[in-house]
Image (tube, rainbow, N blue to C red; front, side, top):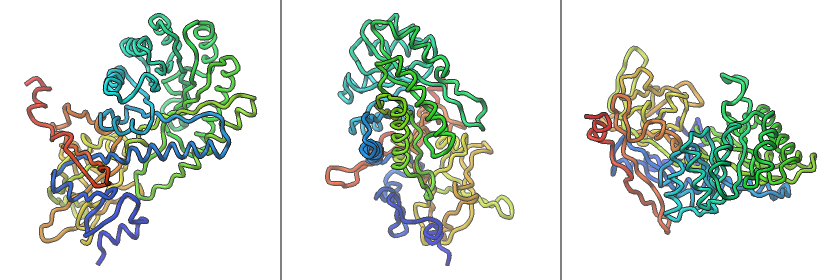
Length: 462
């Protein structure tokens, strides 16, 4: 008999550190998913909090190992990119690990204020303020600086942004400059809309920063959409960025930090193969080599990892409501949720996640399509990252089938409009937080109930 567990074990190197099966039920990071479903029901979003700290510590280890291996003189600083997930439980867990924060828009700053009031951060915490800024964002940043947040660093995204700070900030402060990197050749345009052109950076420094008594240049910032990958494109853009840092350092002695942005990938399939330590060592090695070649002091290195911090902590669990054969060969499992509203990247970006059955691993399997609840024809999931088909158990005797999508913790809630209006008024599912106590025992609690019809109708003005 071809069982589902045989298929998974033959296809993948299974079990893994994160996934194993006991009594035909799936465990995620040692947590029995069926026990969570039996207590809370489906559809269900969950966050396994210890994974956040685990990944932060991994990244710190990788970069500090690289610094030690290459006798690198600069220091490494880990920032969390808040736009990946703004939830309080994410920031609370992440900030246990001596990290700093990168912001993207206006309302991030009240969030920073709240963290400070609660004692989660101090006025020495680095607040790296990115994005193209409207006036209120610039106002909030200026107020942080005037209130003594000495390591709040606005990253200049255009030539005129600094004018606001020079007018409104009354204390010494530091700024960074974001470089407008070239996009991948297959992208829709050539150069990023964000940041300052390479040719304008030194001019911006010399005309507006160099001779001003209050402002100093702290950081040069770099980010490319493709993320940190071992490709000719990435190394070419990074080399170009390092060269600009070296050139700028010659005229800007206060410049001492290089922010290489975010973009470390997360596991989106069980076949995932990425050598984090190798990439960290190559980045450090390249920076050190180019600085030595140009007689330049090695800079401190900042990263802004968002998805890497929180992505692998998340999962979404569904049950199969019904089975539909729509022609001779297209079999559908209709789930009790929606991909468009609850996993929008799977719809908008064709993003693939780790998808596994939760139960019935000893049953035979078959090729199916997964259909969501909305009336949109695009509300489906029908292929894996490693193949064009998806397979799930074919339970008999009326057994209920459950399935899970894993490593969904970054961006999906905010992109889906958490707590707002969903397509076809599909409610946001309940959200459960899973942690471990001081003895390592699994504990869990409900963060939010399912979204109610009353809250939706109120938002719509009824």
